[in-house]
Length: 535
Image (cartoon, rainbow, N blue to C red):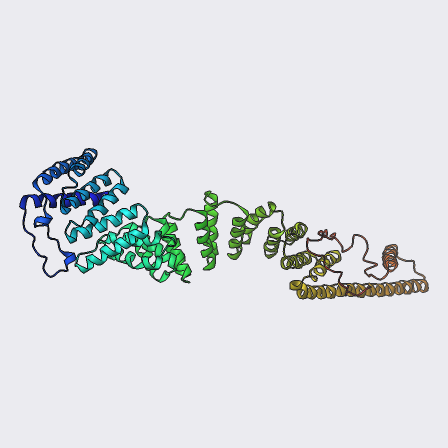
């Protein structure tokens, strides 16, 4: 702004001095309205030689940046000759003193002097109109935005009427003033802001920033997006423009474009904050490239650009899982689960371990999840369901205690609406497996007892034959028969297998049942009816 007023000073002083030298008569402005005239001749539009000489000396002080001395000179001139000066002389002197005050940063004083110069009405219409522009600029500087709006609109209208090119800076100030009033009037600001950008030969960042702000406040992404596209081309080093463009694309539903812009900015080294990196990572997941997202997130975590907190660890584990890299997700999720007092992360860990067929570890994680609690009913029901699955998956062909433990988990799962049907199906299946197991054991027992009875009959028959033949028994054969009799007598003594009479100690039940987790924070499941067959 100071530069504008320096120009004002030089123009006004040169005009005043020219009037002193020529003392020419006024010339009518041709084909222009009266308010557009630029005639500085005639007796009413000239400086007296004495005033002109004093102004000449003060002007030289201004050229040498001796503003305090120039101010003292103008104050003296106005004090000694103010009443005797013509309107033109008075307007000229106040106009020049305003410029001195601008350079001394006395903006309020400069504004008063310019208003005096204008109200005196001693200058030609064109110069009066320029004063309106300068006054509006100072009013903007002094945060008198509504008054500045009035003055700028008046100056622009007169300039258009007179065929004078409107300075793009005037449009910029007008638009900026509309955004500064309370409440801001962004709709009125659009036109002048667009004209300011259209009127410049070279891109000016401030002009584009203002128009971008206005479009943003109005939610006009149809215009804002192409504007931001130009801005990233003009100022590619400005990270904010890239992220804003990505956000504008996203708001318009152009997620692929939003992703591409953010990816280009990241490759250019402009994306550095955690939120921006996480947004890019989530785009990779959204567009079905979780592996690249996981690699990026892991790299940024290792570099210290993304905090290794629970949320980010969960995201990283999810990305590895989506990429079917379960073994990579497990240690990440385990780290997060260890530091959590709630069961949600242990529940997620249990799911991943189950998918990786690590059944014992999955059961431990799910038991920890249920013991910690803090999950909603849906996840709690699913945790019981998955725990039953993990337990059952560890069982061998005769691990009845593990089957029973898995069934207990499925019975608990029946208390939750989302898990009830699947849990009931599992219980039905386990009961069928158990029934089949015991049926086979009974059949095997009965077959073995029948074989023993056949052997006993054979032993007696062989003994009678030996007696008839008067033949001594073979000692080895008698020993084998004795061993067989002992084996059969032990089998018969144990009785037919059942749940109350399982196979002999140390038989097929080689694993003890896993410990049942404590009841979760949610209401316990009601005792479900045992639908298995009692033996």
